[in-house]
Amino acid sequence: MFAKFLKDESGATAIEYGILAALMAVIVIAAVPLLGDKIVTLFKGISTSFSYTPS
Image (cartoon, rainbow, N blue to C red; front, side):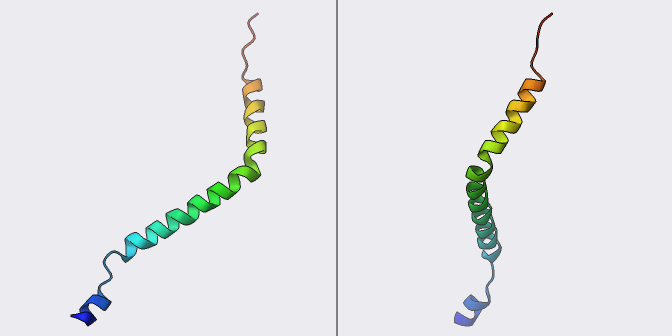
């Protein structure tokens, strides 16, 4: 019974996906402060280029 328990790999895939999701979340959280100002500047530039000026 104990050997069967050790060979049982059900649930291992779910744990691996959970670890990958956590790693991706850490990367995103770390990147936001580093890239935040650049992204804001980019979107402000895009917004300015699409601004409507009535004639």
